[in-house]
Amino acid sequence: PFPLKFSGSLGSPPGALVVGDRFMSGGSVSDLEMLGLSVGSAAAPLLLRRAPLLQPFASQGAVASRFAPVSASTSVHSVSGTTAVLVAGAVATTKTVKDAAPKNVTKVAKAAKVARPASTSTLVDGAADKPVCFPAASSLPSSDEVFSCISYNVLLPNNKDGWWIYKYYRDPGDGKMAEWSARQAMMKDQLLKAGADFVCLQEVSDLSWEEDFAFMEEAGYERLMHEKKGRMRPATFWRKDRWEMVSALHRDRTLILALLRRSGPHAGTTLLLANAHLSAGHNADRRLRQTEEALSQAAKEAKNLGLDLEKCPVVYCGDLNSQGSTAVRELLVAGEVRPDFRESGDPTEKGQNGVQITSKIKRQTFGAFQDAAELCFGTGSAPATILVANIDSKMMCDDNTLTPAMLETLRAAFKTCCQSGRDVMTREEVVSFLLSVNKEVGRGSEYRSVVAAMEKRGQDFESPDATLTEEDFIALYAQELEEGKFWGVEHDLRVLCGQGMALPSEGPTELCFDHMFFTPASLRLVGVQETLTEEQRQRIWGPPFDVLPNAWHPSDHLPVAAAFALR
Image (cartoon, rainbow, N blue to C red; front, side, top):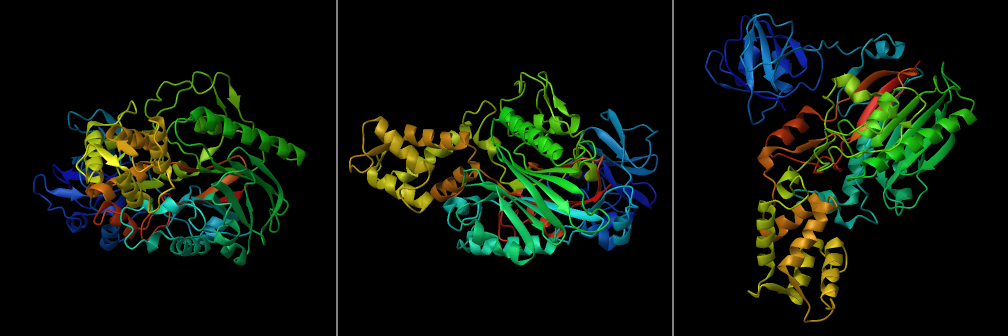
């Protein structure tokens, strides 16, 4: 979100409404008045958000529907008669700024020109020079010339596994929205409406795989799940009327398929499709190894199939569990990662700045990949794929210790469990605590931590004299946070204290862990789909300040989707 406050004159309409590195031409003062700006009044609030559709707006109604309120502020300035937006110390305008700008402006940037979306026939003919932006929740293009792909971390299906999924929901209501039947119905609607050639899912369950996504087979897809052990696996679907699987490679957290085009002018072309769910947490070195190994094995398979690596079309997508300048991205985009490379730009990687990722040069041989979302939306402007409660920094410091506020909240939560007034939980109170957060005794990492703490003091959980100290309780939740279970801790605090650490009106934490890379030498990016509709945006960045998952979206991740043309 780009929150703005008006300062200065707007100049003569029509001007250009500039937001970040994107702009919409043809705006006017009346457009701004519709958005809450009293033109001519000093410091009147102008609340805008980046435009989801990168095309010139045609009417005032279109303007109003593409912006939503947000909270903090920056400034709008008039420069050379052109409305400019001051964002992070830079002025973005529709032309080069020549007149004097505010003193604190140190960098001048031009707003990127954005082409009007091409027609379907233009996309199919391959005449569009730039990728376009497809509306969220729309059907994706698919033809003899164009294929589309979705990557989607579905959040472990809780059909026969994943009992804890309800903890992801800020307000699960009666709990029905968190049940698999409701989540499955939403996923079915999302995936079948999109109609993509390929659907790459992460976090499918081997326990209920056959039934969870049977609707995809009924819709004409074939499918394959990663064969390695583990409860959360990648799985890939493809339209059997257009594609035929030639071979499959099951590598560390990555499923790679070689798929043959059945018909059309590109019949006989083989595409390599990698579906990855890389390791989470402080495992940058392992994520790099997983990616390098997958691409190395894919290259060997391509040679076995008689393919030219320089011309072989490859799509590498999935939940990469990282963002910013990562070693995985460097390997894909630059082709190699050297020992002096350091990661940056991921706020979830606390304390990892400056850490060496590899002691040897890592290379891949397919040539340079491009990030589809960044190519479409602009560098650094890819939409977030995770919109969750803004709690991480409130719970843990950069050195991975608990914040003072978190310690205070945990002590308060412990006291609510000690109804006896003692400074330890009795066994009866421990059982009550576990029932309140996990709904059953005997399951969950909280239970396992309780048992381990008691055993450490020579106690048996089944003994009526067993106790849990405040120190044990705090250590339990410190461990949960170290494992990245912020969502689970937030749920437990809401249950125990009536309120967690999140302030909904602050908006969500925005992360971009889900990516789709492709080889531009063999594939042309036709377009990328927006991740949210305007109504959904308004529900996230305004009342009721939803986070994911919720009543209208069944996962903590948003799907990423793109369309490509074979060269």
